[in-house]
Structures are given as C-alpha cells and as structure tokens.
Image (cartoon, rainbow, N blue to C red):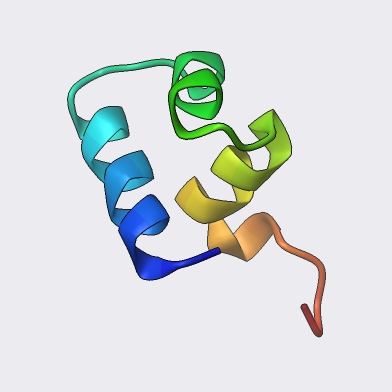
Length: 46
C-alpha cells in the first residue's frame, strides 16, 4: 500500500470513521485497513 492511502486511512480513523467505512472509501479490504491501524496484529515476517 502506498503512503497516501496509509495517510488517508489514519486520518479517516482519527475522524471517527469505522474500519468498514474506511475500506469502502479507500477501496481496500477491511483486513488491509485493520492491519494499517494495528501493525502489531500483522503476522511476523510480513
């Protein structure tokens, strides 16, 4: 994922949007949004 999408995801979450709303707006999966918001949840080595 590029830095622009990462910034948009973080900004939208700070505005209070749900993970699902962000995923739809940015056109990525819910999983991608979740991993972006919580990098500690990503598998080791990813």
